[in-house]
Image (cartoon, rainbow, N blue to C red; front, side, top):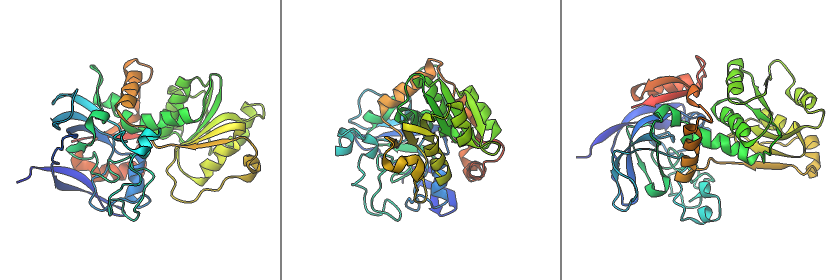
Length: 365
């Protein structure tokens, strides 16, 4: 008889529940990770609301911190009992997409029928956990292509310190990298949720010297200052575009990062750019976008618009944990709440409704 575990599964729109599932069998290239800490992401809320389709019954979550419980027979360089993380994106690096330089899109055209909810194709297929294979909000998760994706946690780092690495930190940093930031640049970061805060921190590490954080929550703007923002603008109190133009002498920002996923923030991120500037888009959008014509200069403004799905793989994870280990950045302050897996439904309600100053919730099986 199969051993069982608890897991948070998507049941239907508006409903995620704790269920019992068999502990996965381990194939030759896999590893079974016992989850010690995971968390809830904004993308999980899109799934909960039915704005991003996944198959009913799928275990949700994609941010694993844990211990290797069992290794597949072909996996080398790791040991059972070792503390590890795996990226939210788990490419195998053998696909055309991976070898063509976009491993996050690994397998986008190979999704098994019925694994994508309403759609048979996803441009996010390198994102496997909680998307088209069972995810991390469970007692155990099966890590595919483990040798490519498991990253040992450096000695001395806690689960909380590395919890942002699998997704939030990797995504936020990719947003900063995609903004083409150069030393001395002015960058505007729209929305200071967890990903936006990491984008703010990434912009600082990349050398931007005027980082303008935008949000409607003063507490989040205070955290943005701690992570590297030079200016904090509350969009409820000021005209953000007007303020950015004042700060840049009418020139506009060199780069903008949109980290929310709405038409309004996308349009503002376009409006604050100088000619030749870059808009880096990180938001998960649930409806069509429209580009403001004047700021787009009818397509003649030498602007760049880039989108991203967070990079994964063990090398990306190693680099991110090196930033933490070198004391360049402390993202532990983003973990504002802690819940057990038994309380996952209440944790979703807390996170989805943004109560009690929540930023990230550590879920501890």
